[in-house]
Amino acid sequence: MEDGLGSPLSAALAEGEGRILDRVADAVRERRLRLAYQPVVVARSPQRIGFHEGLIRLLDPGGQVIPARDFIRAVEPHALGRDIDCAALAIGLDALVRHPDLRLSINMSARSVGWPRWLRLLRAGLAREAGLGERLILEISEASAMTVPELLAGLMAELRPKGIAFALDGFGAGPITLRHFRDLHFDMMKIDAGFTRGVAGQADNQVMMSACLALAREFDMLTVAQGVETAAEAQWLAALGVDCLQGHHFGVPKLYPHGL
Image (tube, rainbow, N blue to C red; front, top):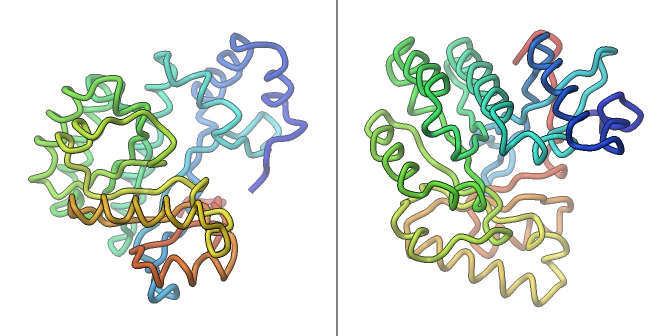
């Protein structure tokens, strides 16, 4: 995975949001969009992959990979952010159809809940193959979930009977309230990497991780610790009872030349 340094889009970061939006719009129009796949492993049996997360990437005109951190905050409030969500969903659904053993999580903004094209793509994808929804996880960040919680709750109620699971991404880094946490009924808590770093030796992070896990258990949520970088972190988290682990210790997000 490239970090995008030296790319035209990275250079545009210094030129303002408008330039970023123009560069991303060009990439969307020219279909220079890919998913990078990162494994999420079972904590107590890390040789087993529970599912993969599909992370959106852009390719610059020269083919260099641009990670989402270089553009997603700029595009997320705009219609262009919905285009990115549509592309990620379309690529992910196609991968699920082509790989019957794949379970995949896809990031989305809650703003896409009422976006007609995103909804059409999702419903058409679910109609392509019976049971496909049971292999799809939709990830939504805390901050995004708080923009339209009522609409999101409605979407979750509609899609759960089709087997789709919902993950609260980056828990602990956003503004979600306990009331919304209760009302939205997420299936999975992905705990922010800030609580994972150095957890094997940092008392503060140990307390925070334990508190996150206790809350998840109360709401019957599967837990994923994000940003696992070392064997010591992985071992401590597994002993604590975290269900799944994700991070560079187990694999970096990887692009496949011809798709997954």
